[in-house]
View 1 (cartoon, rainbow, N blue to C red):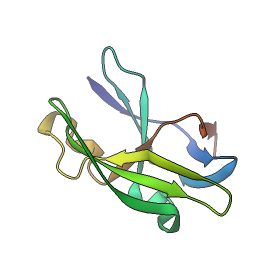
View 2: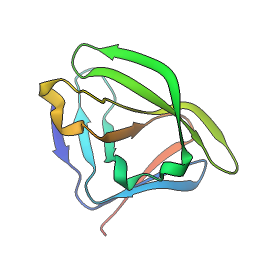
View 3: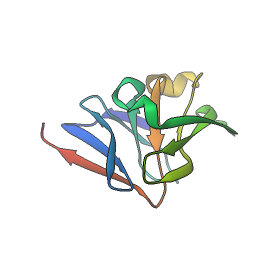
View 4: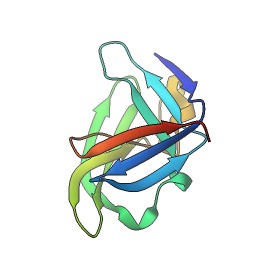
Length: 111
């Protein structure tokens, strides 16, 4: 499992609305899993996140805590998550959020 810093800016869109943008995104490459891009929590709009009751354990990363994303036009249940107390192997993703789902899109730009 490797974590690398993404060059340039990462934009996260949900249902075509930008919900996050960061120059400090991290890529987590875990064998057998899709490449995941994590954004610092401070680079994600807090007004669109609603805490979920969903929790899922991972032996390599820790317990994932989920968010539902709500915008004016759409709701995505449990499409964002984070690890509040990540395992030492992935300590760099603490205070970072990751997104997935059919209405999530990542874009990259040079600045």
